[in-house]
Image 1: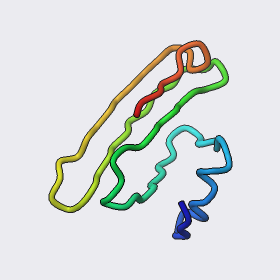
Image 2: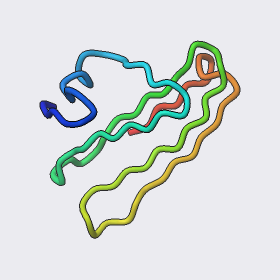
Image 3: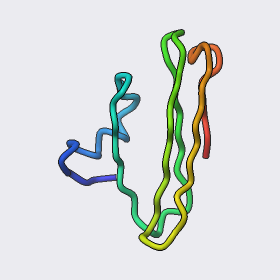
Image 4: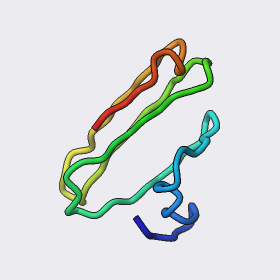
Length: 80
């Protein structure tokens, strides 16, 4: 991925994990030709509460995942 936008350099996604603080909103664009994405969310042992929305194209339905776990280190979230 190589794109720059108002949220910064998207090439950062290929360089390993990034910290996203609670209450933050992050947006990552991907091309219509993309067949799948990988998502890994974990914490340092604290609760993990997140809402993930995937939108691909203007005429497709939004895919939403709402998740909560008491311990994001013992029980991280991973999806493809």
